[in-house]
Image (tube, rainbow, N blue to C red):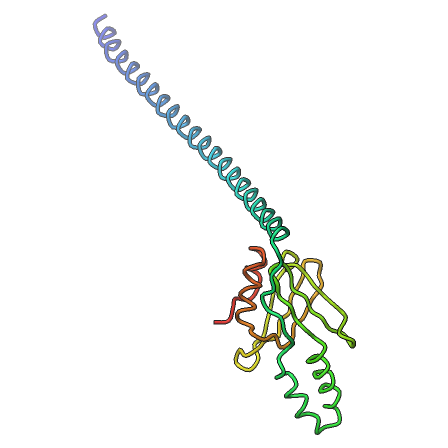
Length: 202
């Protein structure tokens, strides 16, 4: 009887120890699971907040752009610059007049000099041209998708191509006072159009 009692005295504490260890393990597992769930919930909530913040920011940008358009409609139109293309574009065709093929480009350059006129205002850009000088192409700054240019005569003037949102392209050859004109046009464009356009000449 004595050995059995001793065995019970040894086995019972061992069982209690194992049961306690298992309980502690379950508690730790429960805590870690709860912590993981809380972290996932916090992450999901943060993603929802960031998405709502992005939508709110986008909404504010649209409202700002809309208010700018309305202000542009209400404000009086002011002419920033107006003038013909640079006369330097006639130089190369004039020199090529000594060849028979150079006469046609020279006549075209002279015609542009007297018939073409650019006008940059606070609301739009207009190009007057054609054989009779009565063809008018104009577009607002909100229609501009991007602007690209190439300098001439070390920045004295430039050839500029304006791509519009509807896919049309408008070219301004020999635009004078280019740096100031380009910076002004760029400042009137939308944010996305400014990103896509060439940076101002430095």
